[in-house]
Length: 358
Image (cartoon, rainbow, N blue to C red; front, side, top):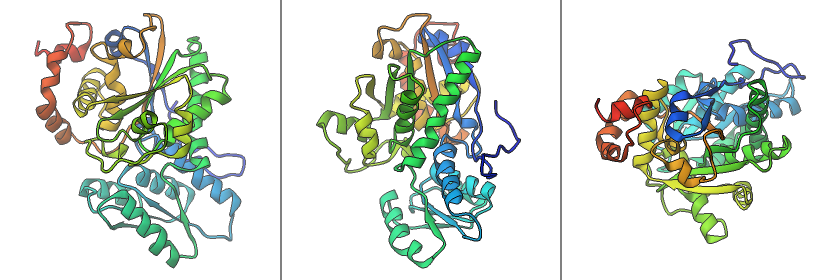
């Protein structure tokens, strides 16, 4: 369960993430035609799953470099990784600086500052340019500076793998057994890599995994089709936090497993996942998360995994994210509302009723 009590590990350092709830959603189960369990990573201290991986990386560093060593954490991010870095650093008693591209909204910058960042520096027109500036210029000027990778590091994946350990324990508590599938979003591939590591460790290596991306940010899918790591020329999707032009090598290697299916949905479908989830579960998430929720609606999940039955169990990782406001959500609904023409007639699903205007 989520808690305001700060948990501490064996070295006495606080743990920068919390155990999040796993709930069975009646509405999404009705929509999908099977049992849907939601792992609510949107309830992490930073608002996203990033608290696990980033927090574990920082905490592991401090365990290896205890006082009197000093650490100032630096991260390049357009949003969720930066916020996780600041949130965790504050809990661990360390300063933090975030370098963001100039395309980052003032809303996100305000979020990062409010979380306790020592500084937020804007540089470049992309995450890559911001990251290069951080590595080559800023870190060179701070002998106490510690680079925090947003997704491509063993300790980041290890942190994310704790999600699977929690899910296994929670499924056992519910006497629900092993899930038939897990659905997660893929940006740089850190969450996906951690989930795959966790499944192997917990003896769930046969669980099917849907690796979800949006069209315009599908760097994993393009790599899978090419049979090698490839980079996108640009990110054109509204799911900006999935916007890694190239996934980490670990994610690509994990995608070769027979249990993994790489799936790409449109921006319209991802946005629809956001507003229908808001209607069904009263929570706001950004399109990077909405793309995973969208599979529950209008027969998409059964098309992707036709072997699923009514009693089958699917865990959706509600990865969260701070890039969402009511204004943005309503704007997407206005732009992509035409997709509701595909909505089914199942009046047992609340968002179906609202979509049809009944």
